[in-house]
Length: 401
Image (cartoon, rainbow, N blue to C red; front, side, top):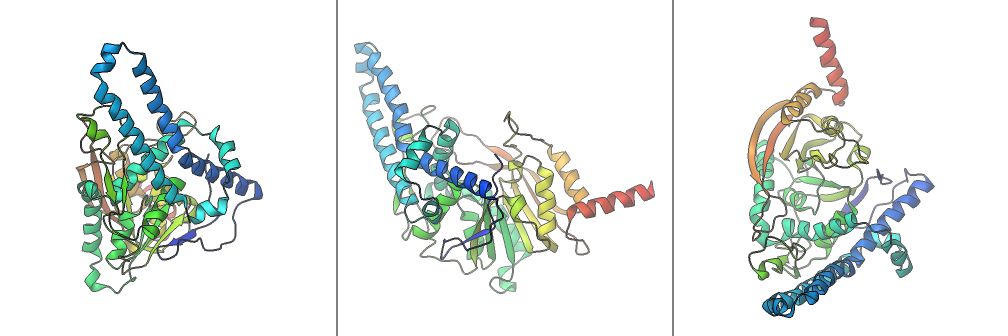
């Protein structure tokens, strides 16, 4: 389902309540959107029950083994009780995330709503709930600082090179971070004095980022067990039940000097006004599109002439294996051709940038990307629409043929 948020509902760091904006949805679409949000909240509330059911299944099988096998696994049995405790503690954090959240308040999810949605919750929603815990660890725990540096540091350094904070007043440079997730990159850029706007489509991410950005008043005030659902490739029992603390810095206490905001909605539907941003920073984002060219053209359109696009990430193409979704999966070569055709000037292009994404540092199996990194500039003499520029370039080429 292609969700459409009613508007660019602005969520600021100082006040996460959504600004009132005229609805762009029909009553039927508004009801569909409400039902979707309720389903997400229900999945978060159902996290403990769902997770414990899987542990119970394992223990039930353990109990069916021969007694001598069970005796050999006495420590493993005790480990399962620790896993249960970790799940309970994760649910405590999830419950806090849902308290005083404007998204949750507006949906008015009662126990009756929860009961009605639980039967409809798919395994995919529960995987997203578990992934949200890992996303919190990736963006806001001290244990994942190395992983953050791999992804965010090259982007931040590139932006500082082109927009040296010493040369600009606060909020003079306007940056957009599409697919901002838990908001750490957005926060770091705002801390350097830029006006930084994040954009996020996932309600899982929006609910969690609201909690971290506005309600985590002290450093490392919460514990989370993000790897507790990884039951395989563990060297030690303690690796599965390892805790991370978050946030390593409190955004509520350490407010950035630049203006920070988050807009909820579909990137392609929210950002249609040309020539707005000095910089667009994308991290593990462009492969989230059914048609990546739509993303590239939109980025070109919303940049001011002379503005830059900084990108880092792989080409995983999230919709490539979904039977009910259309998808194209252009290679890096194809992407570079598209970028040139749209009208961008490629200033820097690198391959093989080693990056991890939400990886358990103690797992026997770790995935690592050889990511792409590039910096592109929209020419000073360009128009707002990348599609128009591309058609103009094609016309010039046809005329020369």
